[in-house]
Image 1 (tube, rainbow, N blue to C red):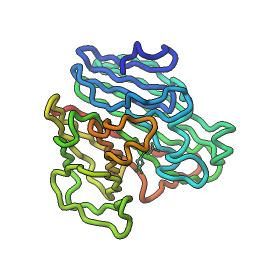
Image 2 (cartoon, rainbow, N blue to C red):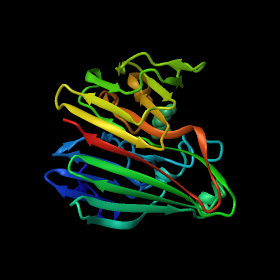
Image 3 (cartoon, helix red, strand yellow):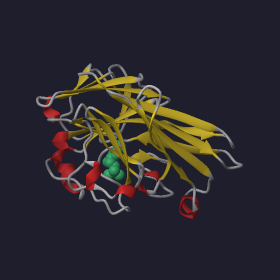
Image 4 (tube, helix red, strand yellow):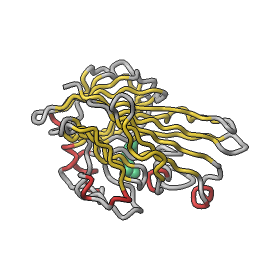
Length: 283
Ligand code: BG6
């Protein structure tokens, strides 16, 4: 996932030098690469379809205005399959960091599914070892609206068998695979060894994804205004059912998704809601 693999008008390339960069595709405002000192930290399927229609399989798709199956439209909402506009082309700020932002507003198609006027502003700050992504939802309508959302990050890992996720011990989660009552997480270092699809509730704002054996990665994800964390890996059988993913690729990814899922956000007419996640490499 290099900037040269795409048409110039399709991507926003943020380059801070020294191998620290981020690449955003305007289809769905999907962040498809975040490199830290030359090392790629996001998973992008080799079978991902770039037809400006289908959601990109990997990186950080945005789920909005709905996370999961949706009675009014496609799973995870429409934001990940809409064309976003560049609001602020990449520029250097006073700290030498790279800032950029993209936006999406309602149109006939979105109103046909979900009849609200809204504006999304998605902004980035790329620092030497970190990337902050901020999503601002503005209700530009005259009536209040409700939404659920997630930044659906596919972290790249060398081997899922050598990957741990820390920070969720003691939380209640809903297991979407087994269903039923909430379960309390007992593991300090979570290892994923089967099809996982769990929504952790009232999560603290720091989780750490450590993976190896080579290359070793240690990514801290810090969130603001994202009370839920989804952990997802389709594992072998489900991975085969996903057309835009190689059968074995589930071993190279772990989705850890910051979200507002359990309790929808209600936004009064004219008001805004801001949420963010920051990835920091802690190697
Ligand atoms: C996760 C959901 O966030 O996304 C899973 O919890 C879902 O249930 C997964 O399977 C992938 O969804 P999609 O629509 O991108 O295939």
